[in-house]
Length: 106
Image 1: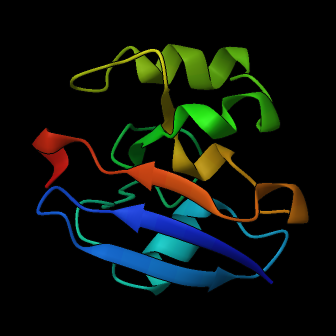
Image 2 (image 1 turned 60 degrees about the horizontal axis):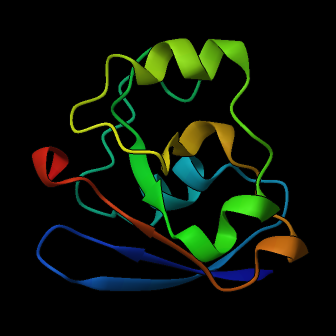
């Protein structure tokens, strides 16, 4: 289990013990994190699981693959640290991961 922190638009903090191997989107949905809609169910076919990854964790997560990068173009309020949570796999390396839900998804 790996602890992650998801911060909503309103500032609510969800401190979650996440199962390794799960996607960040699955963890968010299971824990009813507001703003993570995940309309496509995690197949990288929408951008409704868009999050901002805290800069201190950017180097620990693999860069977006071509499919994710293409989908991110449809996300509102795109930033350099934007990712689709369905494409981030939880591992021990991400202990303490902090992500924020974008304003327009809140």
